[in-house]
Image 1 (cartoon, rainbow, N blue to C red):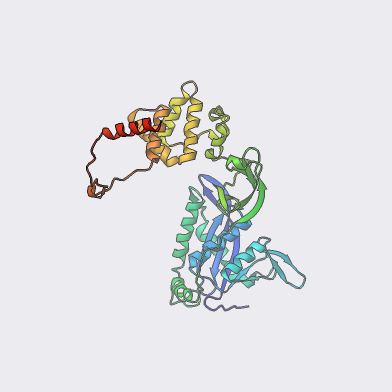
Image 2: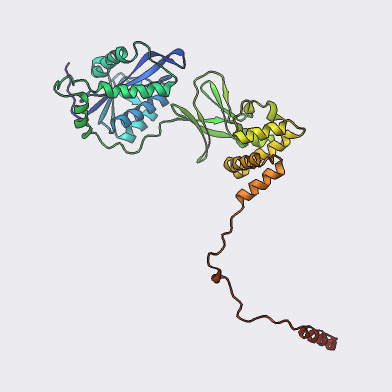
Length: 381
């Protein structure tokens, strides 16, 4: 059945699976396909999978690419979007996907199962772009570089003639359609959240990997927010940890500063503790660490320096260490003195000397006044 879509009316969405080479390794990726139905402008973005947070992020990225919001989005019935289809074809949408739709005020339209023609444009786009973009397999350093290239290729492909308006390009028709899209507004915060308990090792788990949090939260329950590319851990209203998301299996990812307070009681863990293996400190601090660890009791001294970074900030301590290396004064008391100089408030003198208080009467010394007071005390006695 031939379909007609007005400008700004509808956006179609679908997934495809493609093979690419990332960092020299051939692997499968999931590609989110979008297509504005009136102008036919495409947008594609690749992810490691089709998880809920990937769906949310894909829509945020697509709407940002188009610079506006259409009235409807036409989709299939995946579990990340539609949780239930009744016998009467009524849909129950996933709460987070529905929150995304409500945020942008878009109407989700789920196709009839096995009726791909209802979103035939994006179905055809999957086949067309597979031959244009993924044959031969594209090779990039990482997923970010691949997606940057895909974004540019979408712009290039939009320079083709429009299938219905042959005298105009897809880009030209899109410029007309852009005026009919609703304003984008604030981007949707596309995360999936769950409550987790922090292990005694100061780690929380998501999917197959573990991520560290500050040691003071060990044993506490916190909120873990999974985004497409990062993991954020929240306690109350405060973000307590943030990590780049990894798609490996059974690996722990540490932020060494999360474990520094524990070194106050166990300074020896600085040598063999897993969070501190391969710790990339600033150059000056790394040099001071090697100097301390070469001597007896150096663990304790360097731990004291790290604890100062917890109190005053890494920037202050790094500056003090740079000064210490430049002055060849690597002893801890000297570095502490430099830190105190950096954090002490600076008293700015008054610019006008005349503004200082001035004496109006010249003081005169008169020792007889003391003798008078002594005489008065003797009389009283």
